[in-house]
Length: 159
Image 1 (cartoon, one colour):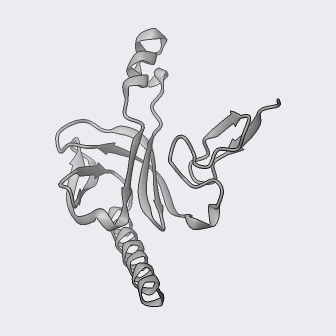
Image 2 (cartoon, helix red, strand yellow):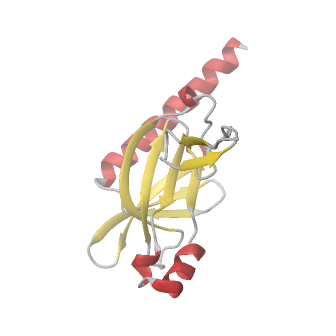
């Protein structure tokens, strides 16, 4: 049977399989109903799960449901060859943070010059991001969170 090529509408991941997957294997987006989730903002930025660790470069997506960061690191960033491929393969793919889990923001930096902000989640996890302009990103995240909560409340009233 011929393989079907599927491209994720959210992160652009291309998969080839005998059947169309229900969800994207990389970001988890629902491929059967792309109208459930859409991108509000996207930017390349650094991410770290710590206040002190250096960040990895990747793509940050703000959707109507979550904040999603996908690692763009590859072997060439780590000097190429077998060692570079091994290091790149060990890097975390990214994160998917539901907007309802976003608690608060604080200013931060990567090194001396790269401005960043830290998102603290309900479970205490930290997400340090260099998305620019940071104030605009923070406002967009909070606005999307408020709209998501309003949608949940509306669904509950109608049920």
